[in-house]
Length: 120
Image (cartoon, rainbow, N blue to C red; front, side, top):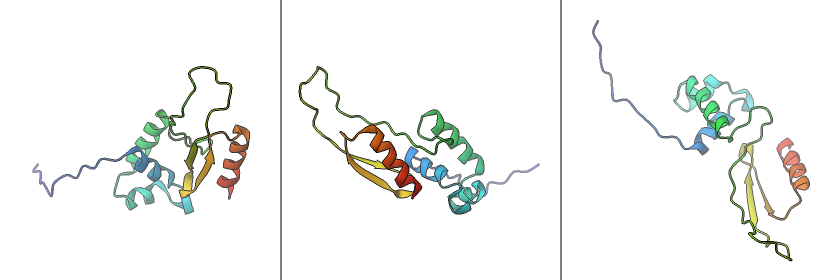
C-alpha cells in the first residue's frame, strides 16, 4: 500500500472564548453539530471534545444554559464600617448580549435581570 502526502497539515490554536462561541452556536437557528463544524472547518468530534473540556473547566453548562466565567472582585480583608466601593461590571451573555451593572447590585435582582434578558 502506498501513501501520498497531499499537503501540509494545518494546526490551529483555539482560545476558550472561541471554543465557547462555536460550542454555543450549535442549535441556534436550528444549526446542527455537523453544520457548525463545517462552517468552522473542524471535525464534529472536535465540538464534542470542546464541550467536555469547557464543562470540566466550568465554562459551559448544557443543563441551565448558563455560562460561568472566573471573576476577580476586590474583597475587603478586614471588616469595614462603610460599604465597599462600587465597581462597574460587564457580563456577556449568550448571543452577543451584555449587561452592565454595579457590583453592589442585589444578587436576586441580578438573577432576575439575567433571566429576563436571556429570555428576550
